[in-house]
Length: 155
Image 1 (spheres, helix red, strand yellow):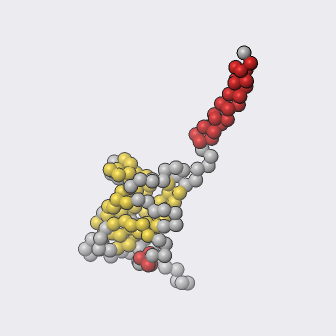
Image 2 (cartoon, one colour):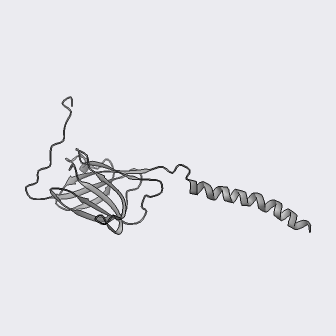
Image 3 (cartoon, rainbow, N blue to C red):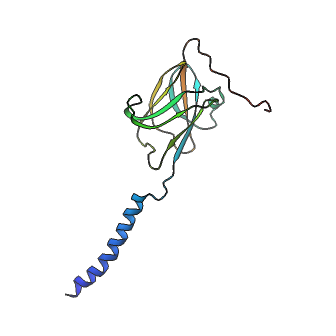
């Protein structure tokens, strides 16, 4: 007779604490956006690789106006299925892929790089860990000349 009263008195606060913890995950405690940066360059093999920011290949001339898509394995850009993120490279060939709160892929992904003047490059790899970047290499089509980036005359 005395034990059920104590059990109920302890169980109610524990239930409230468990409910508060569960709701804090659902409501979203400010999950931030993760960004992956990278560069697209021309080369003889179309592929995407993870590289450290100090890699000398990041000093090569970039390819502007190309679309980088990160897909789940077996995803489709054309159908919009399994697309985690997309970005277009800027005039220097650099891009930034946003992954809003909790959507950063931990498993193997497919990386597609496409656009005018290049053959579409497809790679299967893991996303870069913190501090690393994506280096995407595309094969230019014969006769394609990438536009020159607008440089500040003060440089």
